[in-house]
Image 1: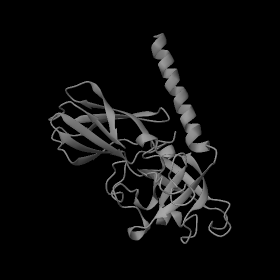
Image 2 (image 1 turned 90 degrees about the vertical axis):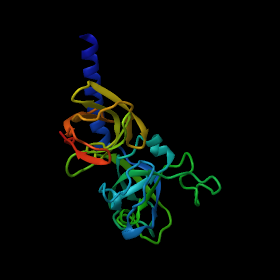
Image 3 (image 1 turned 180 degrees about the vertical axis):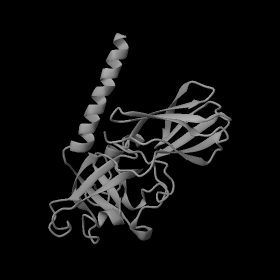
Length: 254
């Protein structure tokens, strides 16, 4: 009982700290550029594994982040509030802010200096934003601007989405549209004929396990970085197929 009580208190502590982190985090300094793509948004597949970002509702407010922020994919799905600062020519008046979702990795280019082209070189903190998002804080003609950023909670519409792929004994799920702090840190899956199985991160927000879950409804347990956990029971019906997407519960602010 002592171990169970300590564990419960630990997750309660994580949850309270996570709420403070997402809502009241201090502003930090970084830099930002933007990627010129169709309709001012990012549409290409990124290192988080989301695929078509418009179908995941991330396209117009997406960003690739440098390795200091990417954390080997653990930041995927997290939301950041950015504002342009300290540049009278490039920053929009009043320093308005915009919220973006981390959807990709901005790789380093050590052939160029960190202040000109090698913006994502370690240990730089840098955001490569969509053009639409960038234009809400700075003039489009700018090549790079100084910004301040902080983690914020993600505002999502509808439930979390689980895109199932794999084969008989290799089961993978891509988790998107995650609310609250947006960063998934642990996933479990359960069939109607099995217990709960922990999944491991394959890459980005793709999670995998090596079990056969065919012919049975699927349930998911998702934990985010704040320590909050939500369980969606029987998300996929017994006749689910690979390459289908299902919708589960969503984290609430309270």
